[in-house]
Length: 178
Image (cartoon, rainbow, N blue to C red; front, side, top):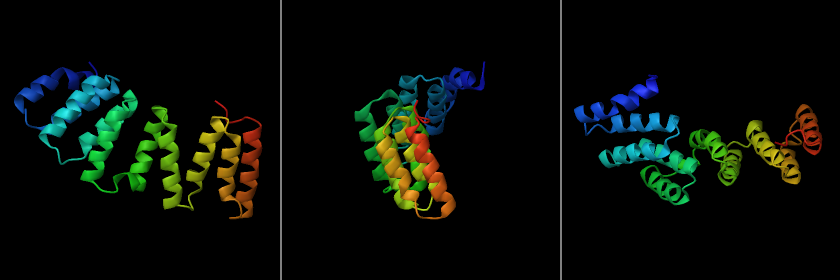
């Protein structure tokens, strides 16, 4: 079996040997996430939380599983717990970046846009945040929003202005449409 299969296979034995070790449950939960068995993953992450409720890591994974399962109630309650454990957690650049691919994978455009907007506020000079948001809109055919977003980069320098103009042409040519 793969490393993943082994973790799941020997997981019960690991738990038997160290039933109070939260990290064991956490690792088994991660293996189930990779297998896309979100119900079992959730069960193990919740046990890790029971054993160590003041550590944010299992909540981070419960939040991810909630997103992938489209369980908005669990997502909301977990997010609140994470904010209590680590105030400002969802305002940090590292956290916002960490969740962008997950928001995209879970088809949560609302959270993707919100995170990119926060990143742009935190780091207004980072061209990639503005262009990522513009691409997101362009991929969905929201050309006006894409254009408005990318125009935020205008006036910084001539080379960037040329790229902005080129990007806008590509938007209206439908080059970003999925």
